[in-house]
Amino acid sequence: MKLFHSRWGVAIVLAVVIAAGVTGGLLATRSTSHKSPSKAAASSTTTTTAVPHAASVTATISVGSIPAGVGVDPSTDTFYVVNGGSNTVSVIDGSTNTVTATVPVGSGPWGVGVDPSTDTVYVANFHDPGTVSVVDGATNTVTDTVSVGIDPRGVGVDPSTDTVYVANNGSNTVSVIDGATNTVTATISVGSSPAGVGVDLSTDTVYVSNSDANTVSVIDGTTNAVTATVTVGSYPWNVGVDSSTDTVYVANQGPPNGSSTVSVIDGATNAVAATVSVGSDPWGVGVDPSTDTAYVSNSNSNTVSVIDGATNAVTATVSVGSRPAGVGVDPSTDTVYVAGGGSPGTVSVIGI
Image (cartoon, rainbow, N blue to C red; front, side, top):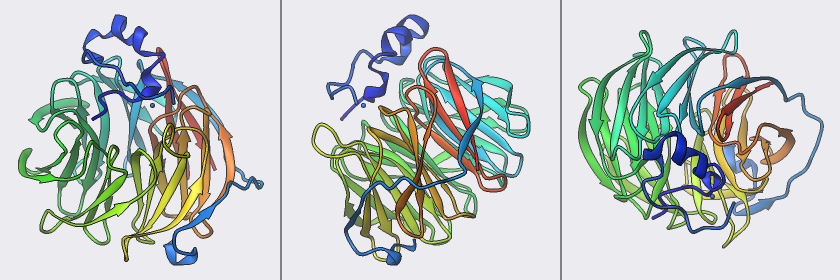
């Protein structure tokens, strides 16, 4: 189990001073780095190919200390950035790229998920320990706190069932939360050190990356049973899903035991259809179903790789702020938000 991602290595000293509760007393021992798939040959490897692309950074927004996850509510054009070193969530108005509120949450917030149908935001606090803050998007206040497993990280939401999935990195489980009652209705055993969560809304399927097992657990959302385990690259971290093509993108951080890649999984077959080489230490994954495009933040390269879902090729590499982490995409505006930096943190806004 890895309690701290290595991107915090430099910033962690600052974080101890700013918010002593964030470190949890342990540092990572890992080195400083920490569509339809039928369109590509099975288990193929796609190398990075730079071609012209319109993506560019159009704005930079100051947020809290050590920003990590990014959540999006397309219905309100609002972005939510969790600040691990500040124990807060920055609320960003997508129409003006300004921070309109700062919401105090639990200790060591990491992952975030949004339910647009209820205007509710769920924030995993890995150092509380083991809680999820429920934020009312209309008032920007915490309305409830839900106890989950040890060291919660990734958060996935299925708005059609009002269900929230939380990966508990220290418990090797996923907590299933009923959004109507804010209670845990099931606890699912998965692989070692689960980190990222992605939900395919078209198939009611949940994908959980197991960082120490180099696998992805596939969960049936109707039964809460693990139906498959897919082997991916080295140290898989975050997960993005394109429900329109039934495709899953998994960021594999790689070193010291492998290369920095993205595994592209065919959701229909649960097979890796392609492996895409990206920048160093890929961290976050965001998907724009409207353009069949995936965006991957590369924490050690200070870049975002833009992947064409039709060809599984990198079509552009966009320079962003320092130590990029979480990625959020608003398909309605074709805008990408990338959290990064240490203390203070920033969000790079990429316009397409």
